[in-house]
Length: 203
Image (cartoon, rainbow, N blue to C red; front, side, top):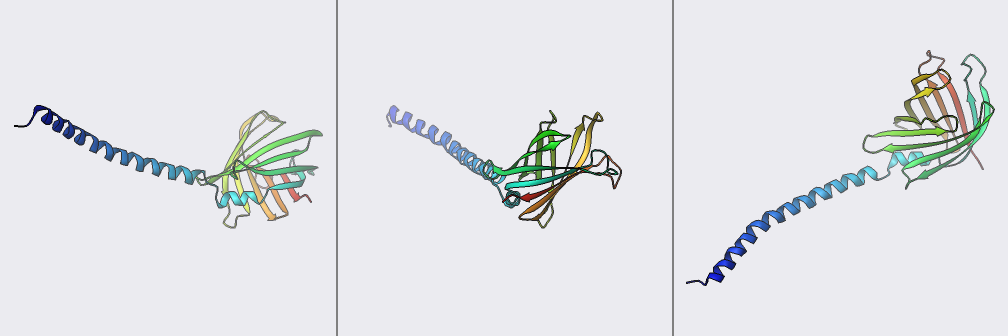
């Protein structure tokens, strides 16, 4: 006849075994799920080829600005400016600090351009000292990797129009030169170009 204490210990061991085995299996499943989640997070956060394309525009630049604020039928207003482009946050975003003149007033602007790995598209934002709103945009790069086309909406204080659609096109001409064009898509075809900036690398 087995001692009651022995019977009790055997029963307790059986309970522990039957309850911890599923827990260990659950732990392994949780670990695997966590590892898979971390893998996806790593893929989403890691800079890749699209970010390297943006890095080609790093540096200091002289800028010639043409704008057709008086309409495309009138001669453009021409001004000079400078830009400093820096890859920030571990090479994930291209930050542009731009200085120029607009309407005979000092103009300062800051923009960020990046590539969203999850949504597979370029994204950007722009803010400056002539507005209290922030422009947001998104778009794609051509296969060659030298033309970035983005679209968005903006408010026009001059006309009071909200949500005006626009398009921007950034073309890398060479390592020493790139061009930015802005188009007001609310205007008739052929009259939509409202700004052009030619950037030449500063020595």
